[in-house]
Length: 235
Image (cartoon, rainbow, N blue to C red; front, side):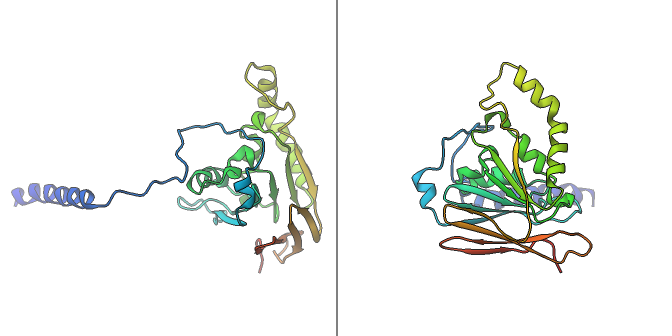
């Protein structure tokens, strides 16, 4: 009996080795070959990016409950070489970085993301807001903008307080700071109606029923080739 017990794990190990050996070579994980921790700076979208049809990339579908397999709620709409995020739950920025290389979408590199639209200010929809603003802010070339319900200005100002030491250290240090105030966010608190129009993209906010959470919005995004509706949290 003891010999059988000793042989069994060895047989399983050998079978596992055979299975792994027989697998075909895996496809490359990323569309763009990159080294680890690459800093990306660009002047603007390329002609190829501008000509690419509108893309929708799901960055997270989670809930307030921690989940090992799902980031918090976040959807990216990529249009004419710019990335527009709708909500930004925990893990969204990590997934944006992965998606940037997996699908070769330069505008999803965190410091290249231009715009954020929030459906409401629950923590599971906003946890990565400081992550997005703080990540490589000193290398951001263009201002970052955010739209959302009343309270977003207060949330943003509180975030600046949290970042104050980092901002002071980097501005006084010897490292490159391309634009000294590029950590600042151009914030717009919204009501129902059209909140954004640019480069043939139109974004309209509409109120949704999220119980006692008021205001709470969904968004209707219209481009020349797609119509996208993001409901937000609603009954």
